Length: 218
Image: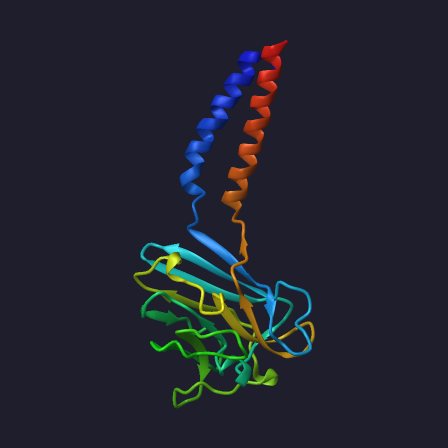
């Protein structure tokens, strides 16, 4: 590649990076359940994911389990399928994605939703009985459907770590080991495609710049 061609390529790539940068910002991030609190083990991580998407002024959240694991509600999880921490008492609505079950949201301003040493949370989601109380759900009645919910007038940064450094906890029946108990998200974030694209483009730009310098020295 000639000197002029290299310079033009670098200029075009740099312009592309500037245009791509806003699109690569985190409108959506994904965390993985990687920490196991189950006696007898959880198998190989990750055990599931939590995806947060900024949708205008609302954050949409999807909690998914891997390997055929099921959401359960045992004493180890304080009888909640999912628990999480928000910076304030936001309005949270949950989709009814589990046939035959009603999913309900609990807000505890005193931050006392706990379970098996995973720390205290102020929000929990559970499948309820007819009377509206969180029902005990063992492995036989567990469900594999994703739990999806929405936080109004919030941003992704309003999801914060609790006193143990955990962002989310799910009470599961492990599809790998057949054991029940909590798994948590303690900050392991999966890189988004836009971020990877931006990083890769930057590496290419550096390599082109290095080659251009080499040509100039000849």
